[in-house]
Length: 105
Length: 203
Image (cartoon, rainbow over all chains, first blue to last red):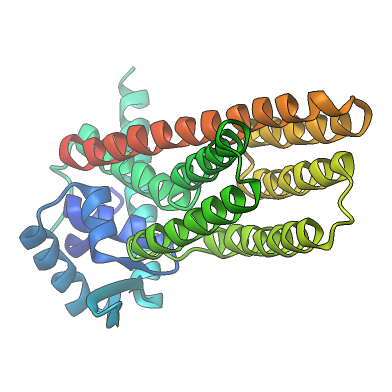
């Protein structure tokens, strides 16, 4: 039996996956925008962003715009590659499921 | 951790989240409905002021400057929340270029005294059509192509109709292409915000 691919546990969390997916389609995004798009609370979003940052999947930059502190996040090359690997692993798992079902039919 | 126990439904839910978020990220720069409504309303106010209260030389500069200041203030607030994407840069470039061109043209021709009313309005409508068309091609948005075509139809019509029909044509085009289209974009923005949030919370 072929080895089942592993899904990266850091990316697999629903909110972390949503954050990485959002950042993969943007050059950079601000905290409030990420919060609005995901519907997460400030606290939960902050925790998940820190986990992704610690894993090296995203980078954060703090700026002051019109005297307001603004935090911008961008996906790193490592994060993009991890997201691609995650998608590949997920496709393999889904294909295995489909093949299994077909075999039973 | 092996994922053998992960159900297919759960994996598909994850895919839904990814799809919804990527779409939300790509669409983020498409909606600027407020600015269409703002400039459409500014045009209507300036026209109404001129027609019913007079003071043509006061009505237009005051309304346009007010709209410009409001655009800058609201725009800077919204920019803080908008993600930076290549699409965002491309669309911004088009509207900044056309906005500057319109300002220079309208300001110069109005105060030079050489303005000819048919070509004046036709040039304005042509430029607005061009900006909408370029934006629609980048975003691959059919409805904005219709907006561009409406502006260009108004521009062509303005070259041929008699003087008293120029204002009604411009008013109709403004109602459809600025206020109507702007309200439609605001509705789309609201709808997409609800959809993407729902995908994360229930996906």
